[in-house]
Length: 320
Image (cartoon, rainbow, N blue to C red):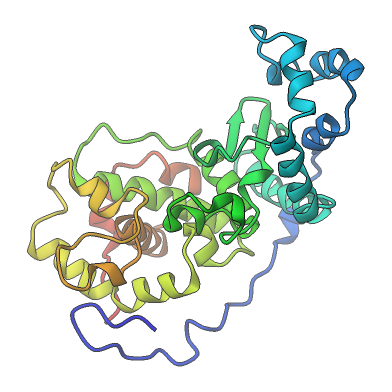
């Protein structure tokens, strides 16, 4: 177990190790949606050269016009592509659980955003393009299944461990929820650190509502150990931000230190490498949660409020 930040680690018996009872509201459960999921990865892998024109007609957005059919035929016969597909097929022999999870996610989205049009879901093989493992564009949701084979998969051997840690199907719904959040939450023009952590806090709070059955670790894409470290050290992290007057700083280096994906957060202290990355996002999440606990505000209203208003009305006090 990782040592405590700035002090000796004390143990929280049972409180954080036990999940709260979670359930889906009846109002959400009875929402009717028409979710279409198409396994393009499988259709393409099992296709023959003469099937290419048919696939191009059905999925024109997956076949850039500048490439001739010979490119796709070569891809059908490529050894690496076949290997990728075999590994994806082994991890996702069917998509029943994921389809059910997606349906529940979109029911929650429709519950909170009634005008939302549920996209068509297309599963693909993306050559492990982990930076774009989920793409939500208007009426289409593209999911690169080869980015969810598990952190220790041999295909990820050349990828930094802190990135590979998120390449697991346990985080698939969280990634889809993140893609949706980008359509509802504007990145702040305010360059302060506070504005940025509140931006990510809104995204994570949105996941609280859209993914009520997910663990907090899944929402923020942490291991359980990383999440425990953040919780145990929340007060010390906050004190660090306050004492160094970081909240209203516009220093561009604060993002790589505390917001961007990284192997650890950079407090510039000896114990840095024991911390998880992106702790600024975690802190913003706690501020937004405190705000929503202390104010009668609807979810869609929250997403448009300024960071300053959220912070001031949150009365946020980290747990000691």
